[in-house]
Amino acid sequence: MNNIINGTEIAKNIKDQLKLEIEKINDKKPCLAVIIVGNDEASHIYVKNKNKACDYVGIKSDTYFLNSNISEIELIQLIEKLNNNEEVNGILVQLPLPSHINEKNILLKINPLKDVDGFHPYNIGMLSTNSAKLKSCTPSGCMELLKRYNVDIKGKNALVIGRSNIVGKPISMMLLNEDATVTTAHSKTKNLEYLTKNADIIIVAVGIANFLKPHMIKDGVVLIDVGMNRAKDGNLCGDIDFECSQKASLITPVPGGVGPMTITMLMKNCLTAYKIQNNINIEED
Ligand code: NAP
Image (tube, rainbow, N blue to C red; front, side, top):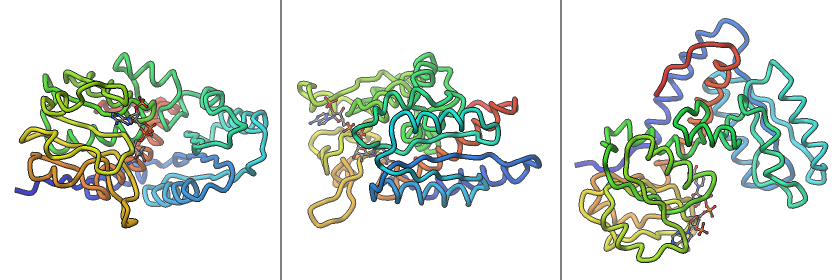
């Protein structure tokens, strides 16, 4: 049985659906504004990939390259300008920002209806009451993979390892919204192995290469690996030791699992933001 989840294929299918939907828009196309501050190499690669995905699905993308010594006030002024620009449907500030800029202050300034990263406290609050339209991209990508592989979530023991604001916490809320019994583990969790052995679904987002080992899991578990790490040999690897695939009923590989879903869900959020701003009905997931 092939138990490897093909995130690349699912991401492509979703992008193709979005492309078709965007082609049908006769009016102006959705537009995403991306702000990047400084010269962080990884950030520039991410932004390039985002622009490529925008081109593919037909979303207009405007990238603002800002000097690393820009002040917080100047950055806020740009965000306010984009908030007030009706041509712009989504605003994304590429993180991390230089240390003299307070990320929380910046994210708070983005109009929540244009917050395509789903990081604004308004959208996090909406998620916690199960009414969010713009949800953070990596967690939504994980949920989409579970859905497309018909994983039954209701009543299942779901364990999320990691509690970051961008991955662990939102995915815990999403699983709870889907009626899983959710446990969120973190670096202070005691007896993690007890939790991993009793979990039906495990999402790992810790940022430690090959953290989850085969002896920690039960047969038939569904494993979602969010991690993106460099192994000692320089290759990309996840937070889950891929030997776990011998016991899991389903597992995401790294690369080719969760990774391709993140930008795809960003594209989906851009279209959703466009629909919200143009009073177009949004089909619920
Ligand atoms: P993060 O902010 O560093 O959070 C890591 C989490 O792991 C923290 O909650 C930490 O606990 C927990 N943790 C650390 N050591 C642990 C241990 N020994 N046992 C249990 N929990 C432990 O990381 P992140 O931003 O969530 O990212 C996690 C990974 O996902 C990284 O590899 C990142 O590169 C990757 N990522 C991938 C995508 C994608 O598109 N595929 C997107 C985002 C992130 P404390 O809270 O107690 O410190």
